[in-house]
Length: 233
Image (cartoon, helix red, strand yellow):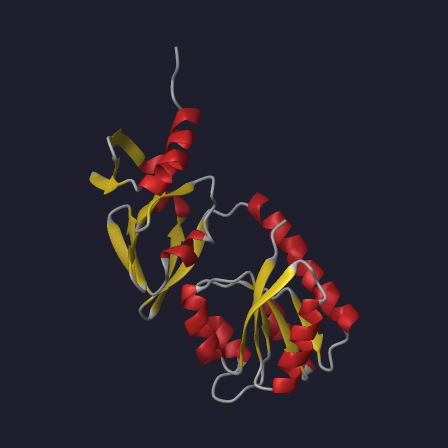
């Protein structure tokens, strides 16, 4: 299995140092960022989705829990805090584990192993819907209703049956949350629901009566999927 990419968010430099040193001892964990507040972490996450967040709770301005509730797409989270009183609220947000400071290495390793086990099971889990934050609303999206998703820089436009939604997400970020067996990237700017393809004409696929370009780097994977369903003599 590939390494889990993670970030550390804690306003205490010593806490970040300890967690970073613990992470360096686990060959299946890669720390790709350390941040003293959620604002800087969120900027990083927008362009660099991660598998796991090691998150403190009581920090200046925005608490870790309040910030976690606002994330449109949630990675796995291990809370690392000096306060046991937030445990119930944390588990209600589907965290992987809750570590009390000072964190012992054996507890850290156990928590990260839980995340690793969960990540290994994730491709085999099935869900029919996702929630996406759009402006001031949180929208429930049935995966079967998604026709294709279009990148607009720092936003994506989600084309659904009879409507469209604009969300502050990257195409890479939303792609990581969708089943790879159902959604395929055909272009740097387009991710499509494979079951919604109605035709392929040259270097374009037809989805929802729209002709979408197929990029050179994505054509081979698309044709492999099509060939698996192709009627043959």
